[in-house]
Length: 100
Ligand code: SF4
Ligand code: SF4
Image 1 (cartoon, rainbow, N blue to C red):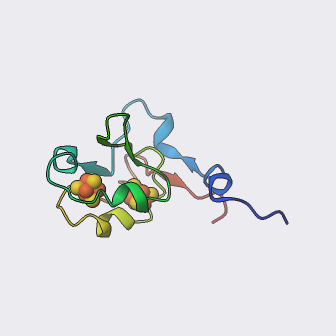
Image 2 (image 1 turned 135 degrees about the vertical axis):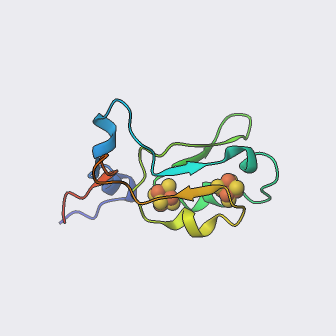
């Protein structure tokens, strides 16, 4: 079996939230903290799905849609900027695990 890269593996994940018109984010990030007092921006390095990114001006922004619900950012952010809640199954969770 061919060994898949991380990007290829992430490509096999589908997201129940993406087909919804008003998806309910399960993670809210206070990017005012990211872009004012945060000294390290560590979530831009540790998120495996690249949900935390920097724009061309170096400003951190967050997009929850590609989140694979690994929980890393919940522990990595030591600045109090991440509000992480397990997706509500009634509202439509984020990840649909195709292989179990
Ligand atoms: S570590 Fe926290 S405050 Fe810093 S960029 Fe990441 S989410 Fe924002
Ligand atoms: S839970 Fe994991 S995949 Fe989702 S935004 Fe946080 S670090 Fe990224």
